[in-house]
Amino acid sequence: MRQAGRYLPEYREVRQQAGGFLNLCYSPELACEVTLQPLRRFDLDGAILFADILLIPQAMGCELDFRENEGPVLGKIGSSRDVARLASGIGDLNKTLSPVYDAVSLIKANLDSDKTLIGFCGAPWTVATYMIEGGTSVERASSRLAAFANEDWLNLLIEKLVASSIEYLAGQVEAGAEVLQVFDTWSGDLSGELLDRYCFAPIAAIRSELKKRYPHVPVIGFARGVGVSQTDFVDACDIDGVSIEWAVNTKWARRNLTDRCVVQGNLDPLCLIGGGDGMFNATKLILDDLPMERHIFNLGHGIRKETPPEHVTDLVSFIREFDGAARP
Ligand code: CP3
Image 1 (tube, rainbow, N blue to C red):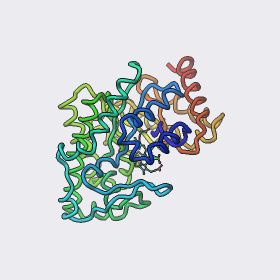
Image 2 (cartoon, rainbow, N blue to C red):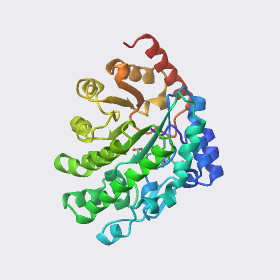
Image 3 (spheres, helix red, strand yellow):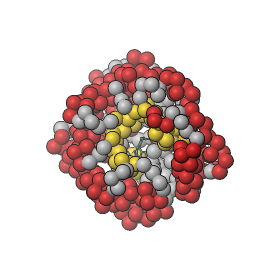
Image 4 (tube, protein in one colour):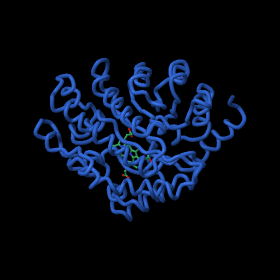
């Protein structure tokens, strides 16, 4: 959940040197460096590739820019003609994405063997919303309207994103990624049959193809905001782990999810800004509810840039001590 990033002064320095976020993503040496920065500071179990879910739209031919204090800006997609122009063949994609695979190989070569390297991509629905809205949007109204209307161009866009995501994740595995995570940040936009069609079915298609090619590589899913449909998510997508946002009740997760798969989460990243007892108490509630052998401790969403790095140090030592002493 953005363990590399702007809360670390050493990240800000490299980012400035690179001349922007995208340059960082496409420079294997620098992407490797910022991926490893948090592991030098904190006693973590894994590294997550430094990249972004919006590199796929860019590789498909969509314009992409990250502006200071504005977030991502994309060329908008909203018709069959727009979608027809997008590439999804492996050759086209890899022209843009090969530096990401080089970054994975470099990270793997420089990572201690007891640390896990996680690769990732965005889920088709979430990535589609950024392409349709042209960036971050509060309501994602055009995307939801297209889903309600069962627009052909949306269905084709999702199909192309499924194909691209499979090749992108396969490229990461070939380069050394050991676990994959699929982020569906905006799956809470949909429910019922539309949630199945636009969120679960595309992730299930990605998962099943990866299982065929790499049966040993576990996949973690993150379907934010789907509430009680988390159980359907795990069942429909055949995932090995489910990452839950901070709003999910961990007692509910214990009753409904830990028998199905491993649960990852779910501290509110805001706790890390306050630190101290507020953070420790919230952490203890999670550790008490979720059994150690079925739980990967993580945040419930991306770390905030105002986070004091010392609070992350405190959090990790609290968890290590707790695991050593109090958990079954
Ligand atoms: O350390 C890691 O977690 C790995 C790298 C990673 C990033 N983005 C780097 C990043 C991962 C896994 C992501 C996923 C991602 N990107 C998601 C899904 C997870 C989530 O947060 O819900 C989404 C929706 C995006 C799209 C995205 N990328 C947005 C909306 C933004 C702007 C928001 C912001 O904080 O400025 C980004 C930029 C981004 N991606 C940053 C980082 C470290 C900040 C970039 C910078 O200015 O340096």
